Length: 211
Length: 399
Image (cartoon, rainbow over all chains, first blue to last red; front, side, top):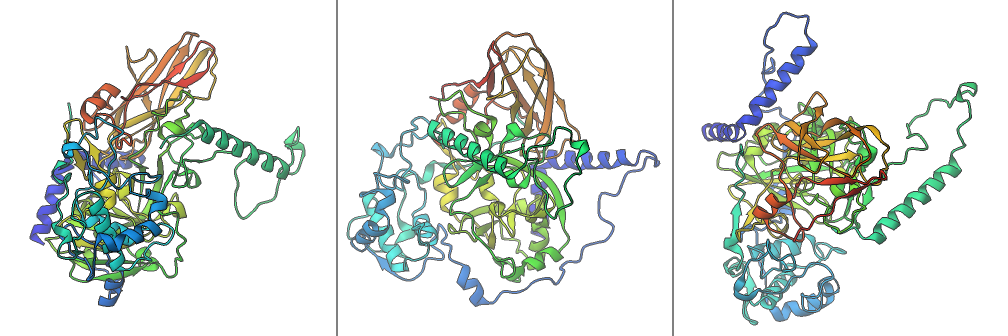
């Protein structure tokens, strides 16, 4: 609880200007509607204290959590057992993906998935035509597995088995020249694939206030 | 994101078709309504037959609010903008549930009825898709809906996410949470836990009624002032963690390449922006007094000031703001102008309570460069009034 309180204090500091002004506004608005009453600051906290918990809801069973918990983290946490190579993925890509993403992943009509830029340049703010592919823009290889498994193909999401997804990921990484043709992609090898764009991503530093 | 001329024509044709349908269903208004007994009461209200505001779909995955047809600050729920990544799911409220797990003391499941039993809050807030700049189509025939239709304001009702986090006992080391929707994309975003302590909601109400399906029925995450994509709709699961999950949306999509060769990640905040909604294309104005009016908003709190220029930015005057000015909500501004018939470029510029000033196009290009998608583009824009009174969007180069 101590750390939680500190977290809260940090959050309040970061947004201090907003929070203070927001509360002040609410008080003055309320005060206007009570103009006849003697000027007296209104309480800023509700009079009835909220309990620590309300006892609403029910415990989740481990099976319930496992059924929905399909996400994969950048460290590979959540990757299921299974494996695939680019040779496994190629026919699946042709059957399930090529219609939207093109025969080699470069043709569209939907997102271009394949292609590196010379010297792994990152010209996206200068060159609107530079395609943001898996090889040129995606910072984490694990995201490719997570996204295909959860959302692709759009006409039948979650119809692919884990081995099929591993195969597709291997094929797309191979086409982007990120792994050799015979590389096996599984829960150990996928998080180790280095993505060229990774170090270009920086946290949003927009500060307040601005001049 | 481009709106082609064909789309515009298709939209116009659809509007005409709808008009015809309505005309055949509605009898003509009597010449003296006071001499005819009016209609009886009915269970569900409808718009006046001659009022036909419509969202304008951009492909199958988004549609914009018709700001040129609206007054005030609240967007009617059926005109709230849409953006979805796997279509609008149909969810049975009786079987809906929200799972919260991960770094918590007590992984729990909440039904919709459970969510409604918690203490509730109602707050008026805008929502905006961070890809809400439609001014680069190369066309001057753009309406406010096309320039910035992907923002709307509603009164949202729900339970504070902080209340649910107390209920499950979020552990101190949890710094992020994953929010996951129940749509066909199982859309996921990572959000800092600090936002829950600030003002995040699990919302089930919109403008006094249940949230519309396009806005996340039966329940959604709502993050006031932050880019719309992170306010995950149809929310089915929240997982607490000590690190962000690096989902597809927050890495390959909703990130912002910068002129310095980096790309901003987790750029949630929607900066201040304003939009003149009248006069605007396709209006034609007459000489004399004109009320220039529009909306301004900021994710950083309240709008402090909106300046209006009628001479292309050479001089600016503060507009009147409609009170009460609410935090993280559309704010209506108005400015009187006596148009004497000359060509004019009319513009608005929002300033928020942090002192942030809505940027010019050159300012934005200097920091952000040019890009095809352009999330978080909030430039000052202009409407050109021609000597014949027609109004068009001022085209500018973005390269």
